Image (cartoon, rainbow, N blue to C red):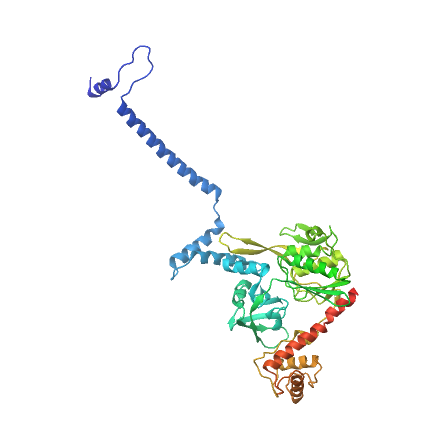
Length: 491
């Protein structure tokens, strides 16, 4: 026997007749078992690893359209001369995609900007109180909020904001511009405004304030005709209106004017809920049309308002600052509720946006559909023409002169023209309304100062300017031709 054969003889004993197994010594058996387990584990690990890799490739297919994006990202992070932050690069890429849509209502908001956006529709916030949007690279005012610092300072719908505190906002998104305009209450911000019909841009200094959550304002005189204003459509607006209307009913309301002038819009569901107070159940409030032309209708349902319906004669007021949800409500009330509209043509915003919050708290606000009136009309960039068109007087839309400037004899220009218009509206004789500060203008200013216990200088500045603006606004409220017409229609 050779050596191997001898080793086999020593390790293995022949079986006795009738037995069917081989007997192996203990130590070699343990070593063999250990090797088997090790090899099995190794093979299993390799197979599972390959399987996981294969599974990832199946669940996340390759997106060839992103190849250029990945290459750009790698190029920037590798070769840009300063350190980069991946979050900023990704946010910038998303912003670029949104901007390429060329839609003023689709935006990307960072976590902080997203929080500010939610504040503006759900609670009070600090700022000037104006709804803005980006249009053709400019920041345009949709409408100042009622009783806000912006409204009191004379900001008008469709004003273009060129600068904020001397810095250009040309090319900014609405979100970026809003961030610059907002600030702590009590602080000041200066907006440089370009207005249609005014030759040169002008500055408007505004003191920021808290913009309150309250969105519904009611009043009613002895004639029992109610005037209810909705300033914007926030989370609780329909509840506020329902409460106000029930109180007015209790006090004997006989007619209602619903004032949507200067209302820039807000939440769609609030407009639908409010429309359900004026439109018979089951009738169309608004239609939505998606990208492939499929239409769906939202109908009135008074169950969301405890079954409440307005039963008194009603008219609705709109103007060029009435946008979005305001237009949805006005169109629904007219086409499905036979309610007449008074005022001037509305803003013309006919699209629907949804806001998707990302994992990091940022938000994509995206236009997802057109909205159509119950009759199927798309009012985008066209607006709603009232049944009875009534314009406000010229002085109502005039640019308010700055109280920090002095205007005196021989001065001339748009500000002087405005001063003459305002004084004339209060029945002061200023001579020719031509933009030239003459002795007639100075005498009119002196009489105004005398009537209001101010120093009689004949110079328009400071307290005199503030008092003039305050009294004109009061006069306009008491002699509002649009409101008066709407009131007469419900008598």
